[in-house]
Length: 174
Image (cartoon, rainbow, N blue to C red; front, top):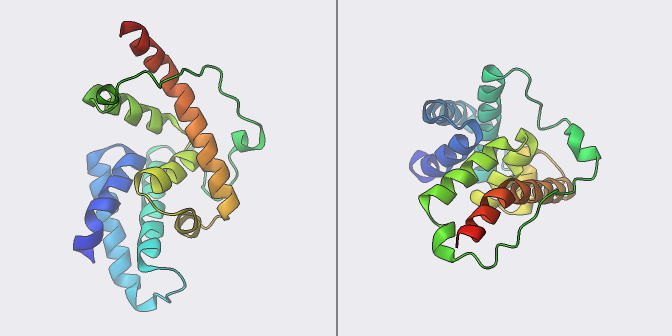
């Protein structure tokens, strides 16, 4: 189990907490909790969903220890109540695929993901980076599927806005 889930859980933790040492701590704490709680696992969800939920909780605890002002995933994000409309959107269709895969672009994308509110970032990471289904993401975060879809859309729109300036600049350079 550790061999199968270590890499995806570490990647998830690193995306959420942004620091390799903190991600390693999250990984270690996740598997300690899984080991101790395994006898009580009730098969109400898949094993992977259960492990992801423990990892997300550990990552959130790490974030809270670092920044006590962070919000719970279970509480609605204040910005979720209002309609989010991006201010600047660029047409990226002309950008060559190679540019999108560069290390520079990856770094810009990682920074943009870190700037998302934790509620949106967590859904984005689980769904679009870890490739969990909407149902699995909802089960992992104890949310409804509709809430997952809404948060995912908002995360994607915010990322698009955050990346628009950089990509517009790159377009004019080409």
